[in-house]
Image (cartoon, rainbow, N blue to C red; front, side, top):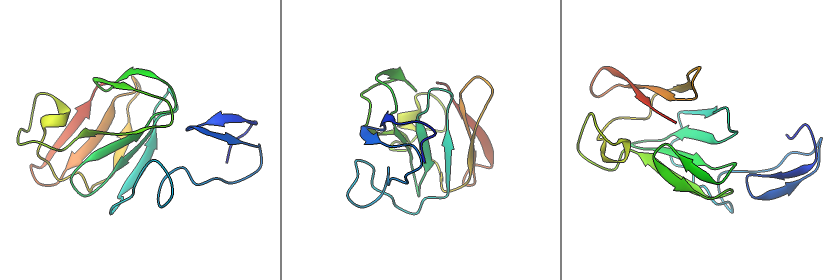
Length: 120
């Protein structure tokens, strides 16, 4: 629920009203979401079965990808590596994620037993 009226996540919103920003009928599909976190730029990150998705609140480069406000992006979990570019990672991301002080996403990868960081 926005604390002020304006455009957030690609939608016009009025303070005090509730809005769907992810799920059916939105730019961001949901599949087995384990956790949700918001980074300092207002981007919403969600850990899903085998990926991390971000709903961009602002346009620009974030998490190594060019993003457009209101669009959803997979930023990690489509590849076969455990280190290197996040988009190339193979991991079990259905575990909780958090945002670190610098805005990096932190998550526990239950498949490798590692705590991973994706820099903003």
